[in-house]
Length: 90
Image 1 (cartoon, rainbow, N blue to C red):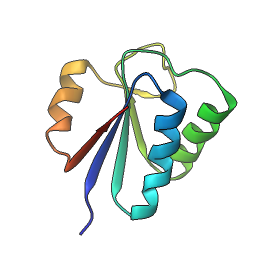
Image 2 (cartoon, rainbow, N blue to C red):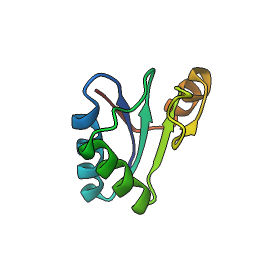
Image 3 (cartoon, rainbow, N blue to C red):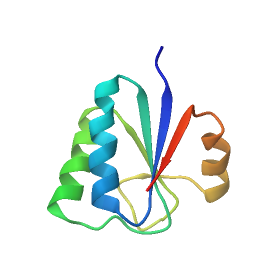
Image 4 (cartoon, one colour):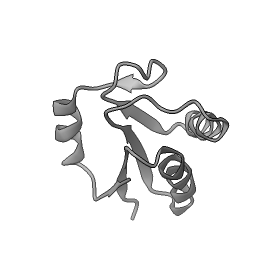
């Protein structure tokens, strides 16, 4: 049975984004939440975000500086997190 997994990205952005792409191999629904800061524009981060887009993954943020990601308020994110089977904080 497929699980819903949320990955919360904060301090270790490149590691969290890489891991979020990697766990898609489990065939679960993976949603990514970039919290409180802009995504560092490294080659690795940009490649991972592009891969997530190609895979149809949902990537949300509460930071308006992340213009290419879907913006949600912190309160909206908190409500959504109640729907997940697993939440992985980074």
